[in-house]
Length: 241
Ligand SMILES: NC(=O)c1ccc[n+]([C@@H]2O[C@H](COP(=O)([O-])OP(=O)(O)OC[C@H]3O[C@@H](n4cnc5c(N)ncnc54)[C@H](OP(=O)(O)O)[C@@H]3O)[C@@H](O)[C@H]2O)c1
Image 1: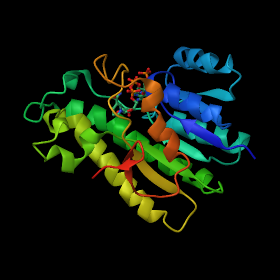
Image 2 (image 1 turned 90 degrees about the vertical axis):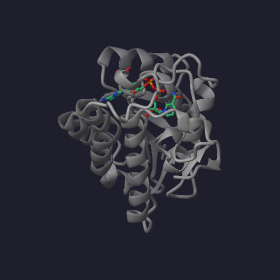
Image 3 (image 1 turned 180 degrees about the vertical axis):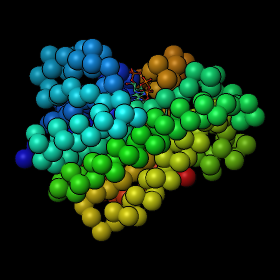
Image 4 (image 1 turned 45 degrees about the vertical axis):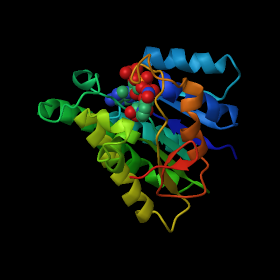
């Protein structure tokens, strides 16, 4: 039976490329987008190459849309093999990457955590029954090396100069979710890992980034069939939490 994947934020950037690479491996990919038109356009881009993809509507902070999507996957496929929690934001107030810790507003923190953490955790929890029906469920939490407290507290690391606090803290919290969920699921067929894609040219990563999306998506794609759990990985190398 074909593997079924859900990729959130799949209408552009790393999500779109992750969907493409998974579909090229023969996976049926549900490409989630919060915007119907953008989602339909993205799906069409992959369908013209003969790939097995489907548009699904998902604003990750909208509980009603989450529930409708879970129902759709259950009634159409009866299981989920791969969940790539890719959708994420860096609030425009923090987009320079400068240290915002002293000034960041509560609403920026809340908005960032709503998408990068609360929405993601709730979606994952609601999909667990379907992932448990898979022979080998995989959850990939798309994090960032900027969320590594080991890296952020090392002044010699080039990454430690990039301190948008809300974004980095949301990815640290996401990493904590990975560790805790992997432990909770250790006696199941589900493996849970965090991915750092690298610094990638996208709307979020900006045009100065050295990597293109095909290379950036590779970590999420490889973790979609990982044989380990509870790790933070970039291109096959483990990153310190
Ligand atoms: N690019 C990098 O250098 C880099 C580095 C490390 C980690 N990451 C992580 O990689 C992931 C993908 O980022 P990207 O670089 O591909 O950024 P991107 O091009 O800005 O794409 C982000 C995607 O997330 C979607 N999204 C945002 N908020 C959403 C919400 N509330 N509900 C549903 N979808 C939502 C966006 O939809 P809309 O088009 O509707 O806004 C878009 O599809 C993020 O988690 C990011 O933190 C990126």
